[in-house]
Length: 495
Image (cartoon, rainbow, N blue to C red):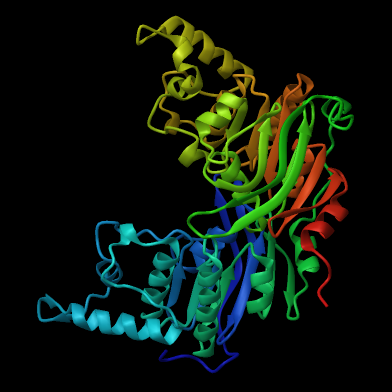
């Protein structure tokens, strides 16, 4: 790349940046410095402020106060590139820097420039491929190439390896190494601590919007994880801890040597052995890239099981699962991306609340308005949802939207409730209320499985914690034993 500063020269500075969204402080005085020819990582739990920081540095968000200074252009490669699916990759990437000859766009010049950068980074991209037919890896490499073609002095990579198969992960790491070898500074936003250790010269740990720790190479996974997941013990009453330890209820959910394969990435999770009885609240805890994301996909019917068995209430389910099969067996799923898969934002609150009760509330194809209203009002009251039945769901606050989705999923009294990232979008009052609801369900004999990467959530919503790392369960702990949980998640200290 042209115009790069000498290796080690400061090229990007973030100084005491603050950012609020309403009453929520997303960034609380964060400072980071990047040098040319190096990778600096930023890690933290979900909601720690990483994405907000990346967007501010890239100029996509405005900080409330503080400064971002750069020696040159800053490029940004998002986790989910937004390309027009009907256009070719070339046409998508040309937007904003179309090479012109007079009034005409010279496509051959753009193709030559992008192909040259791709070769330099060691990646192959088919510029003639329609974006809608491209894989996640192809799209991410294409956007990386387009951003590097602008000759930036600094590149922000937001979770660059998420969703990639092992071959593409290696190609991505190779591209990053070539990028810094050509003098660029890279800010790596990542959950993958092993990736961070392989690539970064240092790391800043964000927690609750604050930079709480900074480490330089050689990096210790245990030290980083300890800083990420430090927490204040949650105070819970005995009524929320009553039954989960005795293990006397019937087996509700049983995973016996279960493995699953992602058809998109070829990544496998498992084998997993997990048994949850009625009355137990168990959290499966770890980084999403360590298997949490795939376990969620498996238990929502998105993945094909390749070996082992999955049983609900003693009934073995088929290898090819679907949401309908899982629900018929008695398993409810509250997804992590609730606003995408868990809600119809343009529908009414009532339409979202009765989603699983439509057959019962209809007669002869006509909705029984009175019964629907009674059902919806009961949930609005029980979960203290601040909104009316007729309101458009999108008009509610984020926390109230979460309550609508959660109330609907537990209202039909399932035998098993799988809830991913349970505190997402909920304030502290909402979190305590949800914890009480899950405890009440457990009291009635429901098995609760919490999937999450936030240690405080694991302690608040569960009684036992199983730690998952590299796709396998590596420990079983009391939910209050935070130190042991973090040690198991981080793995053995590096040799």
